[in-house]
Image: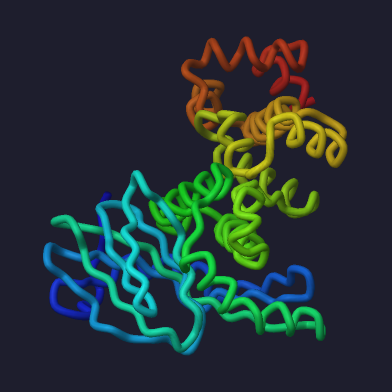
Length: 307
């Protein structure tokens, strides 16, 4: 994992990956049950051995999760250890005193500053009760496998150096925030419900998957990766995708690869060049793929396109 340091916050505490914050800076607020959610800042904080961030507070909510190492949080006198084995997402209400320190030689956390706004009187009541609900939950919840998958997808966004569309990063981060918000609002008495995935709406899900397919179309395309990142079960995913697009995910991936191949062939690209660009292991494999789905070789397709 490579970081580019751009600011030392405290002794042995450094701020990294400013790209993530810039990626989401223009994100429109997500409105869920009349609650507006805006991500103000996202960055990574690397803590070296013995590093301790002094006690402080924020005017907004802070959401944080550990990426490597182990951290101890002390929030409003509540002590909590957060490790890879005991992985939890921490949500700290505004004006709440807290500090943290590293339990290992190097620990990395990702932190996001969140702003919530009510769009109805009922939403205002929920937000008024949220700080107390968070305290009742011990300021943290264990994320579901769906949220963990979305967080891993955010790492891909950072590693891509800007190649992945900002909307994908929005979907991943807002989807995680949405599930955590539901969990905290449910309160500690309904903790099992808080661990269930919170699927996105159908249009959001399909738009997101289409963006992922386009982003990865020229490499290895693993359908299970898309299902995992969506945060819903495989059967539900397949049912939603087919209802919205009229085809299975596999058929959609094939159609997009064929469309890209045809576009390159019409432009005069050599068969070997098309195969390499679209991620096929060899020109012969690409030729077999094209003949199977188009009933002719790529070269024959080019000849017909020229006439």
